Amino acid sequence: MPNLGLIACFNTGYDGIDVDWARSRGVVVTHALNVNHEDVADFAIGQILNIYRKISDGSRWVSDGEWQSNKRLMTTSLAGLRLGIVGLGSIGQALARRADVMRMATSWWAPREKPDVPWPRAPSLIELARWSDVLVISARAGEDNRGLISRSVIEALGPRGTLVNVSRGSLVDEDAVIDALRCGALAAAALDVYQKEPTSPTRWSDVPHAFLSPHIAGVTDLALRRMAALVVANLDAFFNGEPVLTAAA
Image (tube, helix red, strand yellow):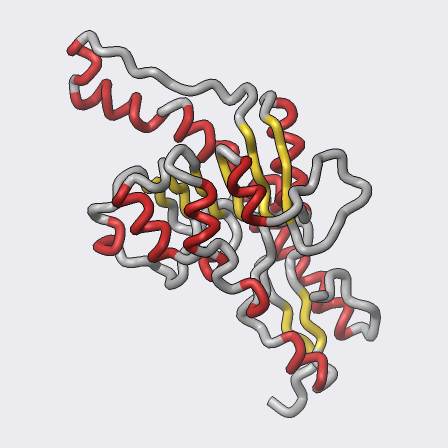
């Protein structure tokens, strides 16, 4: 494609595109910046609510007859729950705002400081994991942070901790998560993204306390309409010789 001038990515993440290669050849790359971040934050909060308030467990109790046994299903309040956020971009900040309303305590870590945010930055990713009850991954993905959530980070999160990934599967050592859930070294994991998609159902069939969804955190009717409109707007700008709206960093 010798006349290639634009790669307009429909999604927010563009880790599948070699931006440096494109830039070196004068090819513009655009993506869906700040379009579905509020929906992704909603989804992450939903996963946290489901795990700690046992919403899906309660549904099974009713349908399986457990409620008839006179047992009580105890749940955990979100008040005071320590939320660690890895990556404080638009998704991370939207999540932190929701956590404030829900009475959680929030801290975060990313490689670079953000001086204008009200939430404290942890000294390191490991220390954030040690502090957190819930660790949510909302960082951008690239070759420089592949496997960022390593076995040591999961060990630091510990047997009472919960991992939520609404970013990209490449950021997390999936084998380490599975091993930790199987041996009780991690309390729960809510994964919306995977190293290979679609992920194999047999890979997760005997993994306890894994709450899985098929990469839908940012897939809402409103978000998809906005993403499509942004692709068109970037195409129009490019072919009209104007600056594109959302160039990849």
